[in-house]
Image 1 (cartoon, rainbow, N blue to C red):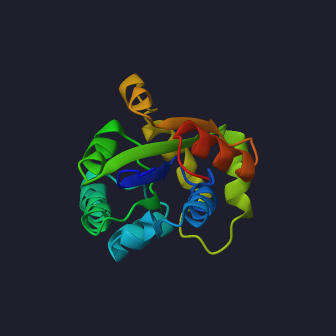
Image 2: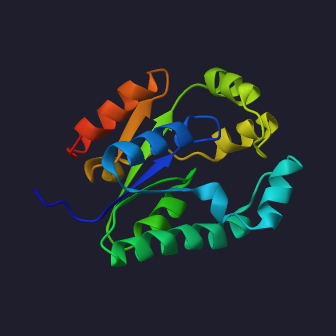
Length: 174
């Protein structure tokens, strides 16, 4: 069966497991993979390292770069999996303008679990002190997004269970 070019945006707050799940999906599907953090300009990384939350004016150029990456892959006939916090509906709308089918996989969980995960991370520029600002900014997937095929999954499940749920929920080849 031929599937259209599809982009899976694994989204959620920092520490929700985006990288783990996106890498597993990319490997399982054989699709291109990218980390949204790779698209941040140094000024954004510097802000977050200092514990300063990003504002919309910081995020728009970053989101356009990600959208452009997805469109370039679609133009080459390639599907992709990427991580991106995509916290607001307006951010997801911009990303959805990329060529191809864009679906969001929202990794959702409680602040305590995510905070514990962030405390255990090493070498990441996003400090745990920014988690409350991310949770405050997060706008859950809308009914329309869910009806279009996006998914919201509980991060208390194992990575294997989450990947299986994504593949089953999106009816993608395993």
